[in-house]
Each structure stands twice: as C-alpha cells, then as structure tokens.
Length: 102
Image (cartoon, rainbow, N blue to C red; front, side, top):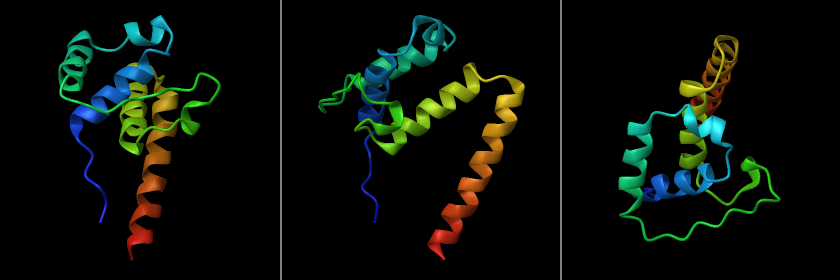
C-alpha cells in the first residue's frame, strides 16, 4: 500500500522547487493557483532541501510534486505540439502502470 502524501506537503515541496525556476516560468502560472499553494503549504511541517547541482528528476522530492510540476508545465507553458507529446507520454505511462498492477 502506498503512503498517503499530505496535500500540504506536496504544496510546500512544489513552492520550494518553484523558487529555483526562472521568473518567466513563474509569471505564467495563475496567481490564484500560486496563492492557493502558499496557503496549503503553511500546514506542512516538512523540511525541503533542493540541491542546485542536480536536475529536477534527481531531486529528493515526491513523485506527486514532480507530477504537479508536470501539470503546471502542461497547463501554463507548453506549446500545442508539446501538449500533444505530453499527452502521448501520459497515455503510455498509464498503460505501463495498469499493466504493472496485473
């Protein structure tokens, strides 16, 4: 059984990671969404450490945080072509995940 990840912890991880993204990326994300993340993160008591020398995929953060970052990229940054590619990757991953459960 998977450990349940607290939404406030995911919010805090995401905020901490976003602190290392460039301003142009952050400026494209809905202010309302970012404000909600900040509010949710206030209820977290985890410590998040980001290693500037590592790629995002190599950071010690939850898969849920990585997933949320992917959705933010898809929703606010990706071009239409990138969105089609991302959807194909998500479909492929979904099939792999379903097959792993069988």
